[in-house]
Image 1: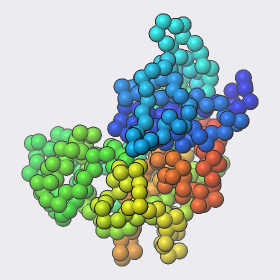
Image 2: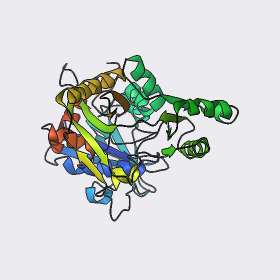
Image 3: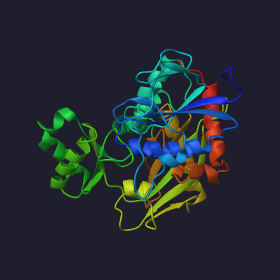
Image 4: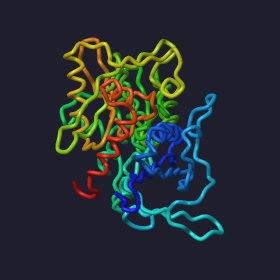
Length: 370
């Protein structure tokens, strides 16, 4: 711990350059509200959509969804830089002499999507020798890329949905071949950016003409696109936490997402602007053996992708009782009403205690090879 004070100094980093900038801000609002000021000295750092790091407000109310309007990081405030190792932070403002903020003990990077959740900020923090919450460079990178994720999950013996990768170099010159591979999956299909989250750029295509339009829409978020078979089944999710000490990872109870007929998928509106059309059942109404299988497979997926700290693993449960791993999220939504914290709340770990555990785990974990 920083010797200059008794409290743990935590830098909460949020915002970022990805299309999930606003969601990251909402997530940060939840965590900032949960960090007990008697125990933590919090340094809120926002990253603007242009990539500038600024000293931001730590008021959670400024990071809440208000009247359907999403929060964002303002370009005002001094620029924050990490000039060297040991977690030293410096603020530079125009016309002013740079001043030190001092050292931080741990960084809580609440970034979603590319340029943050994908191993980039994790690499920066490793180089600066600063401890942080979340998976390392490898786990974060493969957790962001849905195609590489599926390859590793399948290699570990975990079942995944059939899919077709649309590479940037193949779409224009080899479109007919790609569409033939997609058609072999059977229609309809879901088309999504390979490296995005919060259902950004995801759409359902019922015909090959719709596939072409959906690929173009997904390419606005990522030149690498994934087309997946439409799986009919229930959507269930499980949270995983890194074990304490040398212990095995721990799985939460299992939750289920219920959507009415107005939603064909768990899209952005359903996730972040929910109403009576969306329900979360925690714990899910499942046979005990099925719930245990989900929990076991969630831990296996966590380990297969070299994850650390935390993750949420999403599954499809088909009518015949078989399970498919849909995807794993290394930095899931973290507001008090998000699925991940609620799963742990129902598992006996309240939201503030969950945040405490993540910080404590990060402080115990060294940087570098481990």
